[in-house]
Length: 162
Image (cartoon, rainbow, N blue to C red; front, side, top):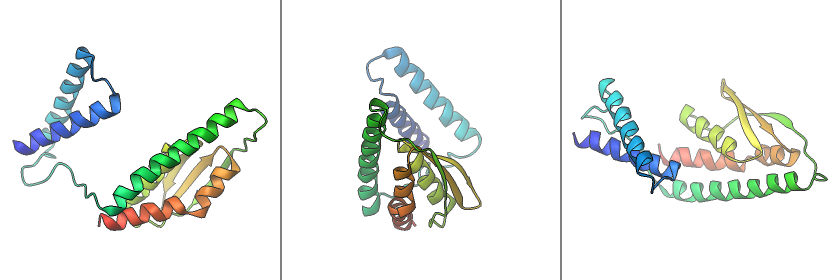
């Protein structure tokens, strides 16, 4: 029962953070009910097993370093995209590139693909057979991904959670 409550609290907290609705009672009720529905479904498919934890996250030093770095990259990319929208003289050169991620697990590759997609100006179009196909708004964004800084950071994050 405690694990089910923990799963509900996690879902409710995540819903609150992602929705941002802290002061509208009707939406808070709908959020609580939708979290309860998720917990009920998880319990019915035996994912809220009392012998298992509902969430497997380790927060190590790499995670503490990675998430603020990613947020900063998102801010920088937002500013770049906004400048290109406001100043039509700045070049936009849509580019498709293929990347071979260095992460060993599928979860690591998905974290990498999602990190790319969260960064404005880039989107992961596909991930298959360990190869990412990425659309970049500019050649600079594509070159930044090809340099591999984000890939190295996600690989370090994956190793710290192993």
